[in-house]
Length: 192
Image (cartoon, rainbow, N blue to C red; front, side):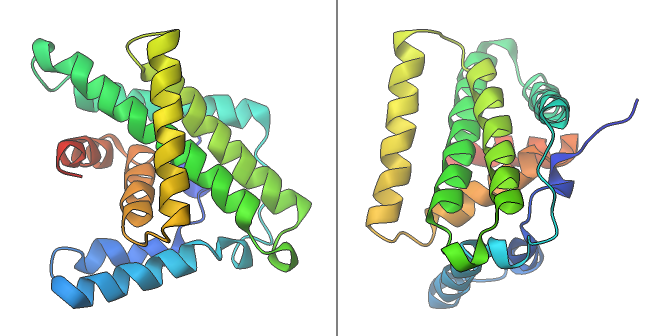
């Protein structure tokens, strides 16, 4: 079976150093590094000029991959914990989709072309669809979660929060990576 790993399309080059020394950094040094990473993450368009838009068929394939990773990780937990875990995963996936939409919208015009914008839009759709599928409830509870996630992303933007977006982007990358990466991301969710 051929898969279309989302990590091949996510342009998180500035986040890769985060994996190497994340645990070793403490205090002010960690805050400085995270601030720099966030600054670079909002300039992803500079690295993305050669990326084609993500075809809708690939978006569906990538959504299935993300869902597969989430299911594989969540089913390692006892049955009575799974609904809460799926809810946390859904919130994080929704935050990922909203954050990519904000990055796409807020990118400087000189660094943004139609193809790159379409790529970010596609990634945002993948995460939003995966988030909607994994949320355990529909209707008003899902709408409330969506509005709450949007309020959190908006607050991060307004307060110029430089830490939480990096944490969210790291989770996005891990949930779209391998099953093992997704398991690590899900294990971290209650702590974030």
